[in-house]
Image (cartoon, rainbow, N blue to C red):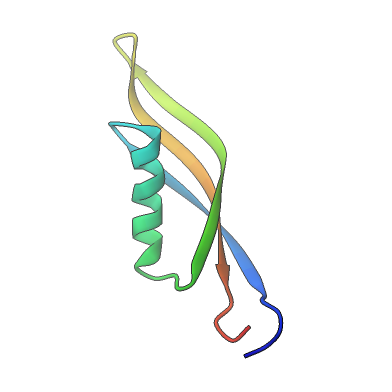
Length: 71
């Protein structure tokens, strides 16, 4: 084990018809299927679709940080 960690960031876009939180969790759940050692995220953008004067669809852009396995 080294005395430091090295990280990489990827950008994801998650969506949901129910909430921003669900959009975040949907993106993280899909990413977790192929990305190991995810440790943090930051929301960089929030968007939505309006239908009949109401928010009908939420979309968030996330930057997700994960640790390089050998570091």
